[in-house]
Image (tube, rainbow, N blue to C red):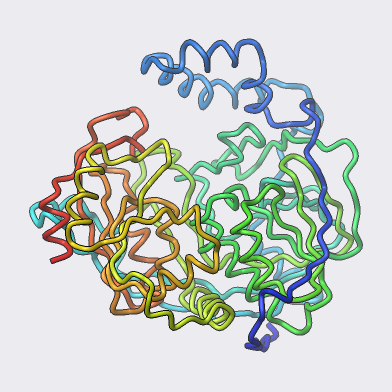
Length: 457
């Protein structure tokens, strides 16, 4: 295995002028099954009249997860025939060109988050005391098909997946959106999205991902891989392929790490791109999308490469360096999403405002502004959500207080494993789910304001 040499160069993000090429949306006939169902008469009736009722939501979820795979299995559509899944490392071993290592394997010792109130500490069950994050490498795939909305790669008569997937325990986003069906016992996949007219390029590196549009997944799983790859001189002329339709903040971060003059192809979900020589990069971080079953133990709460996270953080700080002492030191993150809301958030905000906290809405700030804000903050309080991915830019001394609900499937070590890379420790304030309990870990919950004050004081 060849060792790659990483270079650290300061990037002026205002001078980056990437070359963008967009491969636009697929027609409705080529979209995934979930999209077609939502736009059908039945789907519109369900969304408008039935979804509000818990019984109908639970029935719809059960029918989709149990019935759709059976329907596909009985289908005679040619492209829905099962294809074997091959791990990327296994594929790399039989590649004559070998691989290039971007980061060595690391053993990561995990710490238990602090819990308020202390009596709720038992809700946190550690998945492990430590884990080994594998080395991060680049390998080449010839005559590959990259599809928007998935990091799975079609090549010949097999599908390549990264090594951190555990299909026995976890669903992929692609499955729950009806783009693929995976049989975890046989390790075969039925590919359901068929682009009738894929475009072609001679060479590229793929970074499309089903969860890339989510800020937390982008910052901890996708962007660190791009940063490592684009910092290598040997790959400076290789175009990169990413998801189409990303938020301007994600694009700002992409331009920062991609470097001046990099060719970027944005690929819409469902569209395909044939690549003569594809550079495939193994993961720099991964958290499962959703549990497939609770019958098995040992579900991952997310694992991350400390080297990759720190590499991204250093490059970002160098690009957006700031010593602005006027920035607030105590901030409250306001959550505006429709799920995982704290029902008494207004009361908690009021008490924190009385203690000279400033309420912020990160999604309304530029990426560079978020980096500078979190870099200077001393205390950060908020409800678990994607905006907390910015804690990777915090100082090791920063105090992080996250409100989160009590649920047996909650991945409590997710945020802790992320900040382990920068030397921080997470403090959790646990609350009881009181609304939308059918959403599981995404239900709304109530937090005792005194527990929040105990956590920060």
